[in-house]
Image (cartoon, helix red, strand yellow):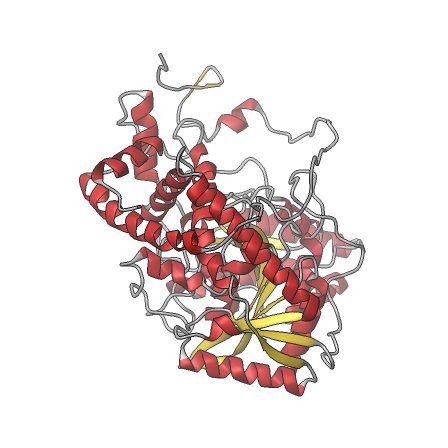
Length: 473
Length: 96
């Protein structure tokens, strides 16, 4: 299914040339036609059709229906939504029906967008391949033997397959950008705090961000524009200015771009390296002043992340206790056993690993050596980025050291899976905005170019990304 | 420092409210030790004079207006997800 741009769809729905009901039907049909890829966990079709009918009625009456009028989208299943279940791809939330919706979804709906389905992920967003989903593995759109990346793998696959024009993801250590890179779509991780996390199932609260996966930078920027800004329900949201995030594209001439030297080490696949070298060549041809920059502390972000993230995970997953909602084991004989059995059966192996590592690093006697040390290394990483952005407008490198790997290839060793985040995770630790852009294929599979900008420089980053997008054409 | 014993894993599981199977205890003993070995490379990083970063926004004391929001949900709607209820309340096993 080949969708027009999001702004074109909305304009045609507003003019009556396209019907929202037809668009929703088309998207639902596309879900059905692509079932073998297992991108989707559940449909929100009843609500989607009702909303589409309401939008078509409004158009008939000549009313304004918004900047995303009738545009169907898919939300990762860690966004709370009305209609149907919200599971986070976990057994413990398998029966859960949310009584309220995420702010991000409410804002998209207010502009006329329509959520048609919920996509697969690594359970609770713990992973880089969707193989940690408690339900099933999503298949890569170009090769069903391979993973789509993760944790927002279902969302990335859905966009790459053309099921919907855009999808929502969350990025805590790379979970939007990595699958975007593997599937050949645009994945945007905003500055920390730019989009409300209210109604998004928490993973690591100090690095979780909400962002779009789309086919073009314009589409991603428009979706961000609708979602961004302060929300009373999330006290960590930051103010935005009144200007739009959709831009005509920055003139790269004279812009200073640093290539992160540490991302071009031994572990980098030769094919990926070639495509990134080509992309850098295009930036140079576009007039940018490009040079290599060494950021020796940035690779430490991964080790810091795998202390900070499990620490926050262990706290955030404490609420799943089998008493108020979610799975509860009826075999338990007393309260203690009810907690232990419900959690033992409801959580998958990766959630358990993270809960226990988090519990360990936060334990009395270990807190200083692990957790506090990691948060101090975090300061070092942030300072290094801050220094770099005094000199450079943008930093670039690969999104991932490899293209999409085979299903099962990395599941035997959890640490190997963690290492796939090596290039994305620094921007989460520091809070900086970062984007993954399609940069051609290597070995027949997509490669992603990553661009990072200074904190709160989202507009400049999207604008430069748009210019890059046009350079290869 | 991190090579975990079987007892360490069982203690962590208890603190985490997880009733691990015997196979899991052994599997996690190896895997968690390996992960901790990896993150311990931070010990070699010089952080003298640096303060930890707990959050990146710099925001402090964010409040919102103390007003009631109407969600149009009844008590029963909110209990819909509960594993067990009685008389419009959550029902749990005895605590004492």
